Length: 288
Length: 295
Image (cartoon, rainbow over the protein chains, first blue to last red):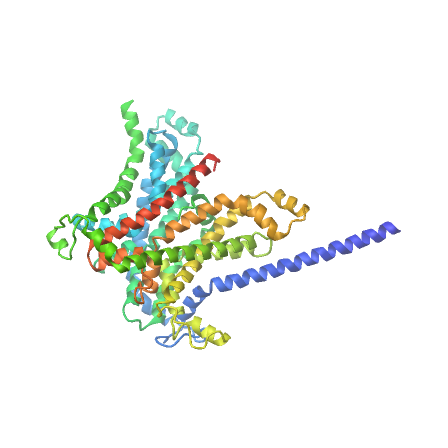
């Protein structure tokens, strides 16, 4: 009799505890959503302003009552070319980055090269070199080589933003590839390079995607090299385009915000589509 | 044997050549340039004669250099303090188990992934003294009826730039610190709870000491990326008003690419590198300790 009473008590107590836990979790979720709303307000504001026509001087409304894509068509008219330029330059930078980093990372991971440690070490150090210092010296070299105002010049410079990260990340992964796998292929007659292309690269797929993604994002976000290594509008990525947009007397904030939205799209897409690679990159690299 | 060693080096050589061209060469070239006289005519004539310590003397005599150095320090320390404190608070908060925790954490990364220039442009509009939504919000709530001159007053603009940079940096700090928190064994918290330790006490005696390596990495990386910032300030304030937001980065840009005095620009760039180098030593120490710990 007394036993059932206590167990009933305990059960009720446990239930109450569970309820309290559930309530606390609900409060936590509410708090998290509030934090999200505050942190993402600027992003919301950017989109909201972009959707409201005629926000030239006056402040935009909090909620776009009469949404229109007028600003976007204006933004595409003036900045569409810049978006294409950004895309070309960023993809080029990814290609350069991976083409250089993958073999180097493999070599540093497996060949036991003399001085290999020093190379990894200096790759880490390059992270501290400010972009403006690189640009300062690069400009005169580019002027002599005829690389100012060229796609090639900007692609090569932008690749420097992702290369150290790619080398470190890929090397960390490739260390874990067993040597025997590659040696087995070489016994079958493949030379070191074909073995690398056929065996090592496919095995490193995820690490390649992660470092490629970051190389893309870094190049897409580049502003310093675009600003300093171009003197004309021949090669003008969207970061530079939007900067010139506000540099002149701003008369059309709606179009500026529409351009901002368009330039933030790659980041948003990658955040949704490639979430796991981005998480892996931040955790594994911790470099930028 | 020799050809085999050559093949092996061929894997590394292209990347090595690239690193030398895009990091090694600029470092050396900047030191040389800081002793040369560049004028707007230099790029037509190709002449940049050596002028001894003239550039260094001119930079150090320029009051703007001292201001920019001081503002760089304020900007960096202020940004790091804010990013780290709020990032850590959010990391601790998101370590609790509740619905949507992972989803919200993922979406919070967006400000960090958007190009910095773009964020700065958006904030420039938000912080506009007359038409910005921030002032109309403060007015509605009743905190400030006149409106704060966020970007138009020399005494406020640097603080505004710091606030924007804190906003940009919170997600990165949060993600790294969150990762560090997950590494701490749960048993330690259970033991602390059995000992009757308060949450604050547990945080101080269990969480912080075990999180220390991650904290150092976050702070040193944050320092190295903050001290050289240029995009944010150029797009937010352009270094103004009245040079109140000039930093060593913007000063280098202004001297070299607006005044075309690459010699003086190189001097400021070298100072910037010197400061970063001190912290790189710290970073490498931390890194080496991590390597030894098997990370």
